[in-house]
Image 1 (cartoon, helix red, strand yellow):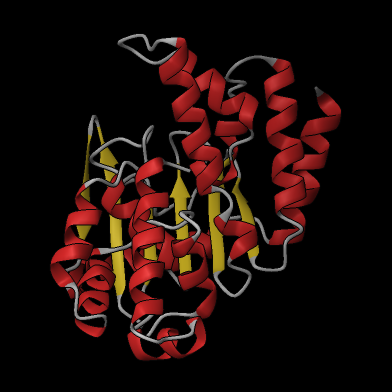
Image 2 (cartoon, helix red, strand yellow):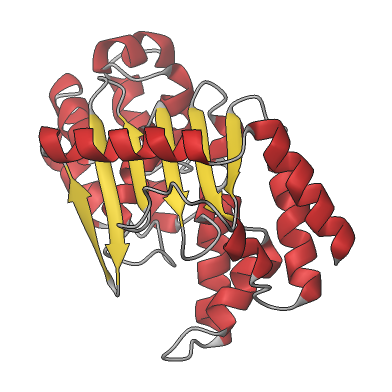
Length: 265
């Protein structure tokens, strides 16, 4: 939790109370949940630009909130090119991810996160690694704090087999996938090593459904990322993701395979 977030939350709370709104009444007016407002005022949620604008209108203090937002330092440890997607991720009511490069960030145990960043080039300092680990673990709270969000992951078996960080790290990855896969709002599917009918040749993809039921796509490259909003492009990604889910092992079969892999280590 950054000082900037805590300060923004405190300023927002003071303005809301000065305007005579309870959290419940205010949430209804601005179109956000009471839970979201509470987290924001506790300094545990990053306010998105549209929220800042809407709150500024309702509280009749747009300049004050914009000024407070300029000092936000949340997402220390998150790459600048990733931060916009991280904000979308926080508000999504459905989130889909297909990964063929690394275990999805939302599913990585701490040991795996450390193994990745300890091998990052150019090398990171211990302080930088700690910030990266903290930021990624903070993101993962979405899985339990948003029980009404549907999370779907299709993960290539090769990513587990690769053994990044060694046997103990791989054990922690499998244990974490098995544990997280038991959550009611999370579905983890493993794409087997051999799958003749595979539509994932264009690489990893992420898809998010916003609260107003718009879909946004996201992909990453070397030190860069792309948000995809064109309807025809997002539609193509949704078609491919739907096919990938059909081609991957089902939920129970995926858990069974992970248990077999765990036993073979």
